[in-house]
Amino acid sequence: MIVKSASIVSGNSVNIMASEDDRVRVIMWTCPRTISTALTKCLSHIEGIEIWFEPYCFCIMAAMEYRRVYGSELPTAYEGHEEAFAKAAQLISKMAVTPEGIIDPKRLAFEGVKSRLEKSNIKYVFVKDMTLAMAEPKYRRYLPNGYRHAFLIRRPAPVIASYRKATIESFIASGYLSEESRDERTFDIEKDNFLFDAGLFHQQLYESWKHVLEACDSANRTVQSNSPDEPRRKRSCVPVIDSDDLLSKPDAVLQKFCRVIGLPYSQSLLKWDASPEVAYTWKAAGDDLLRYNEHFYRRALRSTQFVPPKARDTDEDDVTEDVRRLCLRAQPFYDEMYACKLE
Image (cartoon, rainbow, N blue to C red; front, side, top):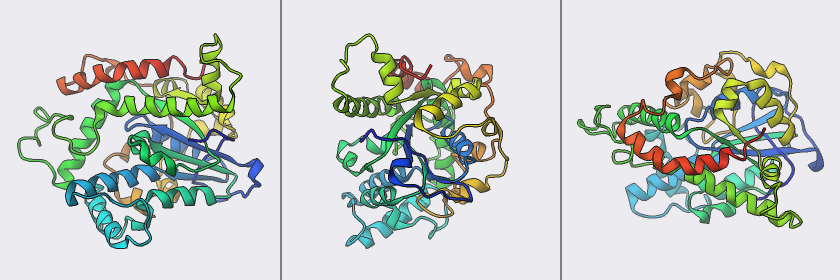
């Protein structure tokens, strides 16, 4: 991952072209259920911004599902492998509960995503993506040059509990679950979910964060890793923000975040229209992907502002046993990143 000048992606009606030195290009890495789609919708209202929605996440979904169904690896380049990617697109269409033809097979190739991101010459480019896409280090070579990286974290309990609920809804709609596992009381997010391991979400975030920090260190060897200023350096070099902070004090957090990554900020970003239409302009694995796939994004796409979490959302004990088990695994990774968040 290359740490360079900031950047941000997709959205508004007017796209501002810029010279290379003026470009702000950022990839915000996160995991599912962190309020990241609502934040993306918020930032979509920056004039001229271009938003990319989880381009690598859909690549890894295609690769994993292709491997599960066909027992072989999906290539990373589209050219010469058109038939394989057509099959992968059909698999993802079922998984995302979208009509066939919505997913563009060409956009499921890691090499293609890297190339398209590097070719963008819009002034503000913002990419929202999942670190689970880079859990296999072999895919990191396909990250684009010239992008800065930021991280959005959230406490394990609300992340994993929310992911569990959304997964049950999505898998029922897709026809993946047996009669027994359809029951929310007996469903186990670790054992009955064949796609992503929610217990690894925070570890994957942590590992990607450390990878970026190492790149930052190599670019600035004068800073010692054991320096007393290390937490401050981490906050400025690779910004981390926390979802609970964003929900509770959006004005302060958004100002700091935009300042650090180089985006223009105004208080007009604190409220936005309830219509999901702006999301349909985001660059995704299909032009109309978000119009048809709402199981994971419905609430965020219709949001109008950041709302402080309810008391029940902050109760770590009010979760199912499978969620509690995975939270114990995730907590140390979250805690270390939280200690380095923007202040």
